[in-house]
Length: 96
Image 1 (cartoon, rainbow, N blue to C red):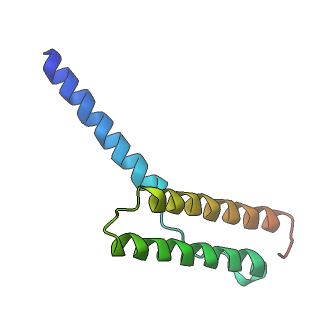
Image 2: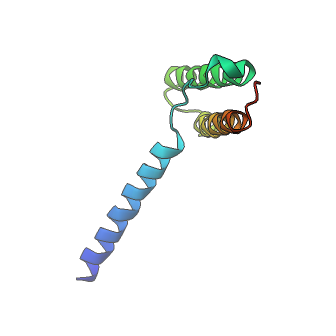
Image 3: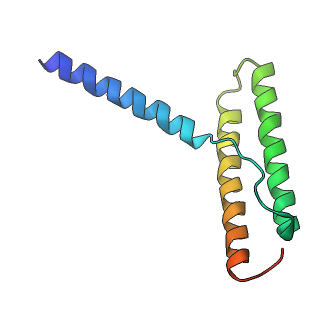
């Protein structure tokens, strides 16, 4: 019985870890309109950087010590922050 409980717990932990990794690397995309040109431009650069990192990972068979994956995670976070900035600008009727 203890072995089954341990295996079930280990499996659950593995599934959660993989799920978190998948969410952490949400692929950024451009969804800010022309009203906020500077923020849209920043978002386009984030997307381009994420795509370049993906190409680098492919070219190196994902053997970059986890650094490219970490960079992609940070770019995804930056993309979220830029979207939030656009939302705040919209709330206050500002153009950026």
